[in-house]
Image (cartoon, one colour):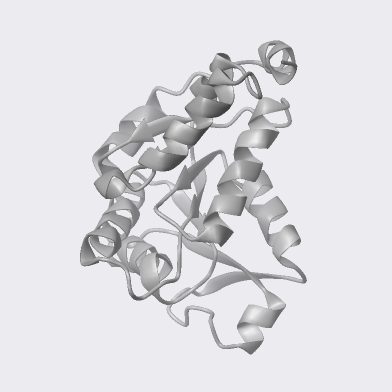
Length: 195
């Protein structure tokens, strides 16, 4: 499977540690250098702004997908020329899932967490067969990983569902995973959907 376009879920907080922003920018740099088009939430600050800066810095292609009310609040990134404006956040999520060949989740707030869990659920139900990569900068996702393992241990999901996501620690690992991603296939996905 060739990955040409990815959706990157990331946050807009300006108060996070500098390491998170540097990591987001590096993701943008790396995706751009690899010729991978980026879709993201369209924001100008926090990890969103850093990601966009990283893509633009390397001359890559980036498209923001942003709800109309966020445009009205002037949250859109003026440096990003391609913007898809949606009516709702749900429409934004749908477009981010459907327009890309893969999903990358950076450390986040509740918005990105919502997007990530929806992507995992879609894959678990066989609604798409795309790679989902979680960048675990500074161990940010350790508790979520433990919670997903707890879900499996208590039989709310299957152990196999944990294999639907890939956890990496460094931005460079993302490209390696995307290059080597092998789809699980619709039949296997349907078999995974049931407990």
